[in-house]
Length: 377
Image (cartoon, rainbow, N blue to C red):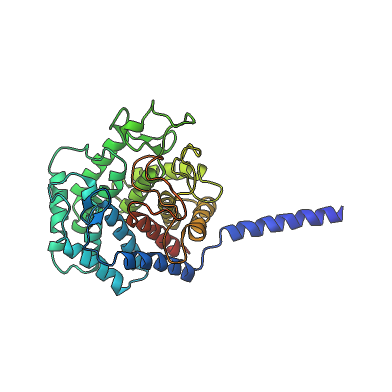
């Protein structure tokens, strides 16, 4: 009997130690090392930030893919303020004259994404109003026109919404927060058949083409990993900017919590998320960009008290450790990044060695994730 009890209590102790170990935070120096390794790989390979991006066609280097990279670089700069990072971002923005592809009248959020970094750079060192003149003019155009139906695909929520939030904080003007809410709720509740957010499942359809009756091969709704990651990250980036008493803050937090619960339920056993959140067999496998965005959001939620650490820290750390151990190459190349597209079949294959059509946004997502992991205490 004593032997049985001894074994029983030994198992309990092992289980407790395993729980503690599972929630043990990564060493900050190791986290910083992997972040700088991945970023150094990118900055070395794409040393000339003035060069256009060439795939099926030529695009300027201030498009959304590069804008997302600089979002991540700015977060890395906040925890590790290297002059070379600032110079790399400032030089890129200045080369583009602090402007957007298609100018100040563009309503396309992909064009506006670069404005997030322009505003961040201005906040670091407000050397000249020209740094925010163009993006402010573009956002004023949105504010001063009645349309609220611009964000017809959920990626746009991440590309455009934080710009309005950052300008609202910078200027102290409520009109940017109000417009942001109107555009967000239109996409959430109205666009397509019944809005793009399925509150029952806690996830977003990428655009109206994926609303029911569209189904995945297994009969489930199609919820694209990176698309949901964009919304999840957008909520974090907005909540970082708006005041604590902003009238819709609680609404954003509510959506963030609903999404967090849904994402927790569909994490893979290895820590990653599939490209298709509800159909693991439809181009199933590890995917780094969506996984990184979910880590970014969960780590932020834990750090800011929106998520329970006991429940979500194991999820975030399991995903982060998987990214570090299984996706990052010794030279800093990031594997398992799905190429551009809007659904599971796009941007394939997704493997450890496959190079996506654009490397920049995957790196940006990873830097966002790691910067938040670094801040955890």
